[in-house]
Image (cartoon, rainbow over all chains, first blue to last red; front, top):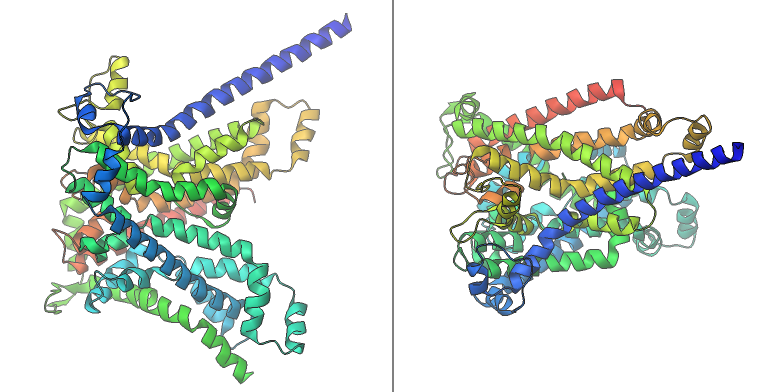
Length: 290
Length: 296
């Protein structure tokens, strides 16, 4: 009798748990659909032909006659290839310069002793709180005065340094035991060599995190490029897509627009699918957005 | 020692040059700009020094509209997105199979271009002569009338903006909260289970206090981020946000600086400093509130 009641309680508890996970899975699936649906819709629309798309008063959830014509239009009617190339150049150069500057500064703070170190580091940290909107106005004027509008230098220079990354890397560098440094010194290794041969390899995960975050930031940059470029030859993809939306293709050619959107989104999504563990770990350590 | 001094400064030099030129100098300059009255960017001259730029901005109906939009956006999206993120994170950590798949899917919006995907949202919500759009199709299944979410009434536009903003910011929040939940010491849960504590009680008495620092971190960064909203609005409503009545404070700053109504760095500076003051005040209030409610 007693055992019977025990079994009943256990059954009830299990039913409770199953009901709970059914609710959890339902909610999670609904949100997953909401997240994925825009991606599905952009791929779907980009595969519909112009006439088929415009003939649908009620949007169709599938297409039986997929076409790649829109992708051809996206690359020929507007200069999508160029926007793409510009963004690639901008991203690579910005990230490379940033990496050098940040590594050197972090090394100085973590490893070298010099007068005023604490003061300078505090000042650096204080700069972290300055929002971009406050400095962008003068930067715009500076770059305009230097005649660097519509040039890669104008795009890249103000986007190079991030105090936060210096801070992140310095913390990581500081964890490397001092003994390694002294041993290297005894062997007559120069500071720069020590930095490149010992510290950088040890801190590779942090460096990769920083690179990933910067690449995402660069690929999605919109505000600064918009201020500094009005010549379509220097547009990045974000500005390109805005330009396409407002003047390209004729406003109603939505399938071609969606093809452009797919082309722009694919590189980061592919990167994400390959490195999703690293990227998510990196963002949870040092990302901010929203 | 002296040699090392020199060397250290040499290592720091690039960072100091860049920060000096593009952060410290602009920071001082923006205050200077904001007090120069009647600044003319062509001749680089101004009439006098004073508060006129602030007075102008505060009376500008476009600025007031932008402030209203931004505050609405902040008040709606920050609590809602944090709450939803908490809900999904708890659901995620209660399941085992498929958890990684869901996490990966949820993170996808983080790596997408805001402008590009915003265009997809615009198309989903937009009503044109050719079609009512997908969202209106779904609304019609429930018998609701077609609404133009992109060029229609104010509340509809605000709804789309909030919806898209939440869609964009959720990945980061879910990621942070799931890792916070995973780091709560399991012993607390086991002890509570031995005592026969109910699930609701466990959630409010253990889980929530334990992750409250992270929630609070998300609320602060959420406030700061939402006050700076701009590119989401551009993605949905185009660059002429004033005409769409959907401008944000940051949008107002950029419009004053550049574009059809641009060329007024003084007004832009005044607006930027006002924005900074607002964000600073809100962050300080947040910090004060948290001191009372967050368990570290």
